[in-house]
Picture (cartoon, rainbow, N blue to C red):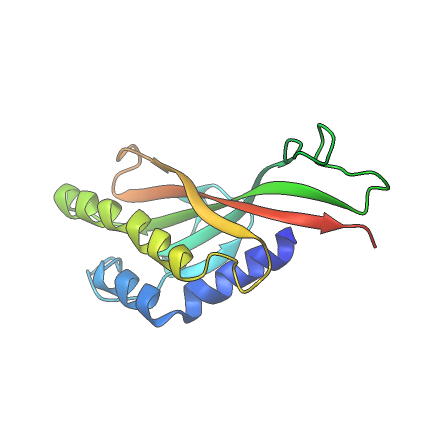
Length: 164
């Protein structure tokens, strides 16, 4: 479920016309040009991402846990004969880009979360890979590494893992 949801999210981010238009409107290239950020997988230090990769989304795994019990299950979301378990996983997405102008970087930062939220509102099940996905948190770097900027969005994915 988790890997499939991550792949579906990446496909949507690189293939949804409205999301691509929203990203291009931000002018995230170092020269302010309209670009579509690439997706990179894995945890990496943002200051070690080469300029040739910017702007980019860095995808990483977040926390995972069972869903608390429902009326017909136990405390771990299981049922008698345990054929499935409800699960919640966080997918971490960090947009990394270069921007010299402080005011422009704030405007860009303000527009990133709404674009991803709108993408998930249009595709809440990530192409049927989960029950529901939504933006659960947004953390900015507060211009700490200016002119390199990073905004991390936590995409919370709810689903069911079935016994095989």
